Length: 390
Ligand SMILES: *Cc1c(COP(=O)(O)O)cnc(C)c1O
Image (spheres, protein in one colour):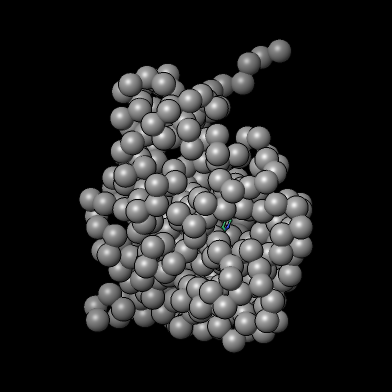
């Protein structure tokens, strides 16, 4: 048998829902020498990661560190550590990730109540309150940035209703962290998780999590052991804390990557980075609208790092996305669930949130429409340029 050659992936521009474009500085950090997970030099790196993560998440929470695994591992970590069998949990569902939270909570033994919203819309306090139905819950779970639909959730509304039903507030910040303002402490978030491959602009593989003192107390007062051994924070926090007790081998090189990506965020400045995402998101939408592509989400609840647009009548979704990939090396996302086949999801995340990305994406989409006989007859770069000039 002949051996395969070593891996040389094609160069792509990743403007889908994640993984996102990665800064070369992060890629080169990944290639530095692997240390032992208890090496004193590595312990310094861990502490720096925790410190920078707290800044980026806007929290003083002691229990803040990256879990080994992707964003879904962070979701599962938050849920299995806070839920004991029979606990009542309220989950807000307006897309794929709320649906996933409800499923994970059920599997962890919770009595799950869902409050549903049309995909493409966020929840008001009244809508969440109606879903709570005057009952008490241990947790209220909600997605800050629903990547499946492009919707941004107002967390103040969620906090208000969580207070009314005596619940801890658990928030999915996978796509918002590093792209929208996420101030866990100011917003009164009790438990949060994110992922490295969205606006943190790092490869997939780690999931930052944070527990408030209240959530940590719920963890330490559990009557039953955490159902998952691997995700048990009572043990993992001994490795990230001063004991440094071995639990599982930390993914050393991934942590170098996260260290570099957090550093780049703080060098740029959080406010500046969020403003950058907002600017390029607006320019993209202006260009798309000028070509007649309609955003799926109203302007006031639209995400900056992820824009969902309707695929125009008569355009074949799969053919268009293959065209973008083959002709331009450009990846955008298709729709999920009820949006499959009729929605494109365009991510401008982290290092991908640039004017260059906006230009490439608009020009390539125009070519994709023309390829299927629907020349939009306008240059979308003009409309985007007006945003940049204003
Ligand atoms: C991507 C994503 C997840 C899941 O993360 P994985 O890294 O795919 O496991 C969860 N929630 C949201 C909002 C996401 O965008």
